[in-house]
Image (cartoon, helix red, strand yellow):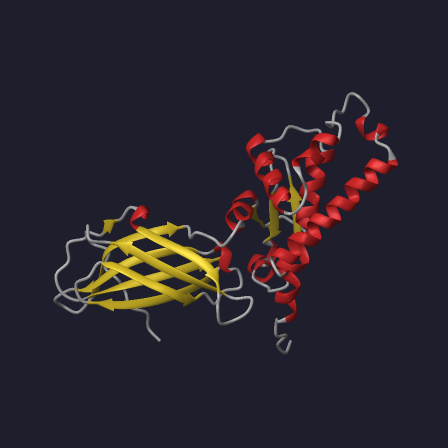
Amino acid sequence: MMSTKLNFTNRVDLDPSCVKTKISPSSIAPNSYEISVSGDLSVVNLVGDFTIVITHKALGETVRYEVKRQVDLIFSIANQALNMRNPLDASTQIEIVQLDPNGIPVIKASVKNIIPELPGNQSARKSALKTKRDPELNVPWRLYFTDGFPILHISDKHGLYDQLALTPYFDPLILPEVVKQIFNWLIFDPSMKDNSHVDAWKSIFEQLGCERAFFDSIPSPNEEDGFMEDMTPAIRSEIEMKSFEISDRFAMDLELLDRLSSTEIGDE
C-alpha cells in the first residue's frame, strides 16, 4: 500500500500546553491501559472540514487515530485503547490535516512530544529511571551510575534494542532487579550522587514501604573511614532483606507477574 505524502507548508507549531493527555488502567481489559486526549486548537485559523490525527509512540511502537471534524477545534476523546507493550512510555503527537484544492492532505498545525499524565505514582517512577540505547553493550542490559544517577543501558548490538525492550518479558524479568540495584547503590556507593535523583528515588522507595528513617539509620558511606569493612553482618542482612522487600513490592504494584502470566507465547 502506498503511503500518502503530506505537505508541511505554512504549518503552525502549537504549544504543547494546548493539549492534555492522560493514561489510565483499562476498565475493560485487565493489565491494559487507555488514553484520553483533549485540547483547544482554536488558535489555528481553519475553514471547512479537517482531520485531527493523534499518534502515540513508545519504543518503536506507533498507534494512530484519525478524528474527522467539521469546525470544532476544542475536542475531547476519552478512553482510547492503548495497545502497546510499553504504554507508560508513550508520548503523543497531534496533527491537524486538511485537503487543499487539489485534494492533497496538508498539515496545517502540529504539536509533538506531549507527555501524558500517568496513573498513581507511575510518573515519578518513570521520570526517575533514564534509559539509553547502547550499541556496544555485550549483555542485554546493565545499570550505570557514572553521571551520579542511574541509567539503564539496553543493548542495541546488532540492532537488538527493539527486540529486547519491546518484549513483554523485559519489565517483569528486569525491572525488579534494577530497583534492587538502585536501592543498594544509594546505601553502598560512596561516589558522588545527584541529590535531586537521590531524593526522587528515596521518595519512590518510601512509597514501596521503606521509610526515609531507614536510610538515616545506615552510616553514610565513606571510602576513607572503612565503612564497608566495619558494617556488621546484622546490618548487611537487614539491608539485603529490605532490598528484597522493595523489589517484591515494586513487582506487585506494577502487577509484573500478572502481565507475564497473561502473555501469549507464539510459535517460534
